[in-house]
Image (cartoon, rainbow, N blue to C red; front, side):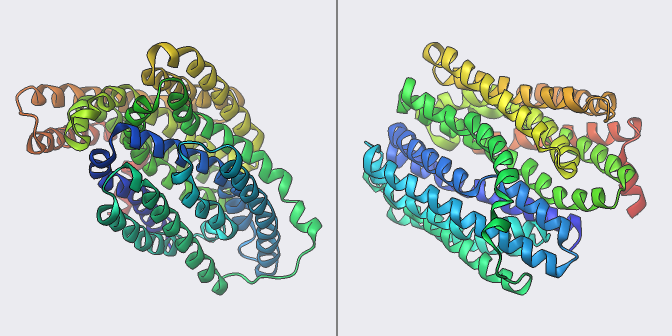
Length: 474
């Protein structure tokens, strides 16, 4: 399957995975209130840490390892079998730790956390890394979409009050478990499980653990901020932050999906020594990502407050205030993702990723500790922005002599200029329209039109690699 089709499937699924909870969010927010949303977020994010420990850094390490040997069936089978054996051991250990948390630590959130045990169980047979390494994105997208639609239906059927939140946790966890099981079964046609020694399995533990450090550090400022807001500022503030961050996370799904598709592709090019093609791909992808994330960031800044009132209800008006600055983290996330997935990871330079993300995590924790007590949820927003800026900065310090950073930064600045003009136009239109869904839709239409016109004007002037690709196709 072509890279374009893989990207389409992966982008569609990743965005759908986050959009679906957004479909249920307005109903859920009104049914359980800010405290209920905050309580569920607290339990879910602790469960997420358990799943991170279970999977280590397999989404990157496993994908890259499989992509590197996929043309040799014998080596592919041994690599897959060894990594999966290692995964099962680690995931089982993480499951035991989760059960200890449930029995000895969990308090108010225990009823919600109990059904989330299925999330840890599903990690025993989560083989998406192997399918991504084989560039088999279609089965992941289709199967998981089906089971999550069933889970979403359960929300509207069963959730009526805060005490029903355990059903929500059970529905999503069971859907994830079922999706992973079906994907694992489908792999039988592409790889075979062979007998491997413990030593063969354990040799993958160290490099995988190294990438896990970066995954864990990323989660510190993607997940731990909500835990800290809940613990320091209260669950009501956490509920506001959760719903603001949920929208931004939804939009970041476009970025991570494209990076996931490009990693095995660029790994294969790296193995063949085609550096020139890699640099062309990186430049074109960077321009596309920056145009996309700039439109998202400035678009959220223009309509965020109105959107949250309409989408979540009056009680969540504060989420819109938080969303306005938080949206600009999308641009730094996009920049760092392109450099990581198309230059650093394909070369196996995992320590750079670890250093950059750990630096971001340290900045985030310090900023949260200093700012949340006085600024509450807005302190977590500031911490996230500082952390997301730190990651590409540290990457630049390591690879600044290898990549054409002036050209890459031009993509950032030109895209930001497009976004700024779009922002002004959308805000001016918003002042003339009532606070209704029709008014919001008109603002969005104006924003899309302005961004499209300015982007088409910008591409020829920039000598755009995107424009050259389009010309070759036509």
